[in-house]
Each structure stands twice: as C-alpha cells, then as structure tokens.
Length: 134
Image (tube, rainbow, N blue to C red; front, side):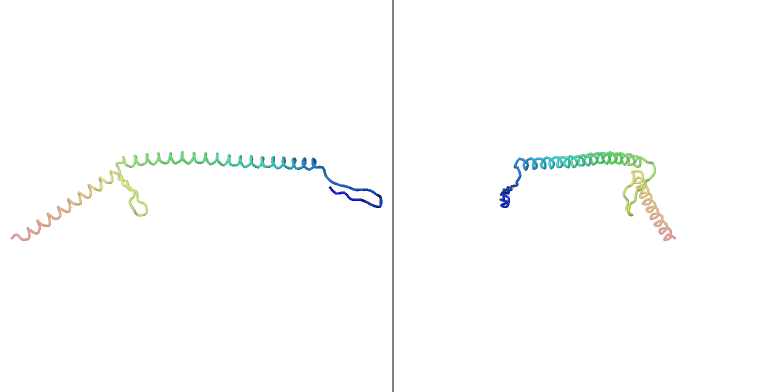
C-alpha cells in the first residue's frame, strides 16, 4: 500500500490492492494452468496410446507373416525333399542344400565311377599281361 500527503490541498492520497483480489487472480491463473496441463497430458496420453496400438498391430502382422513364411518354407522343403528330381541350391558359390534324391544319385554315380575305374584297372592289367605273353 502507498499513502502520501498532498499538502497544497491537505489531502492524503493512498493506493493499494486487496489481498482477496490477488488471491482470486492467483487462483484463476492456477486453474488455467491446471486445465492446460491436463489437456496437454491427455493429448500426450492419446498419442502414446495410438502409437502403442499401432506398434502392437504391426507386431501382430509381422508375426503372422513370419509364421506364414515359416509354413511356406516347410511346405517347400517337404516338396523338394520328396521330389524325384535332383535339386541343389547354391548361394554365393556354395552348396546350401541337396535333396535326398540328388544325394542318392551322386552316391550311385560315385560308385559307378569307382566301378568303371576298377574295370579300367582290370582291363589295363589284362592288356599288360596279354602283351607279355608270347
């Protein structure tokens, strides 16, 4: 509060504010801040809820697609393994997979090559023996 004497007229001039007015203004500002804070909190909570739901749905879709891919790979593997044609998969110049039919064919081919090699050795020995006979 401010009070001062104005001597030429003999008046005392005073000014000031009422504490009730100050308290009422502070309460109004506090309420405004609380409402704004609540609105911001609800906006953030809504955004987080939306993001969480979107993330959850995306994860469910990813898992479903991953499961379908796994099932498809299993079906393809069974199909390839049961095939009566030789199947070989090569990635980066390395054999990644051979089906059982191809392995059996390779084993049989290896055995045939070995047999042919043995027959060739026997034939060569026979020829050598034949050349030594008069």
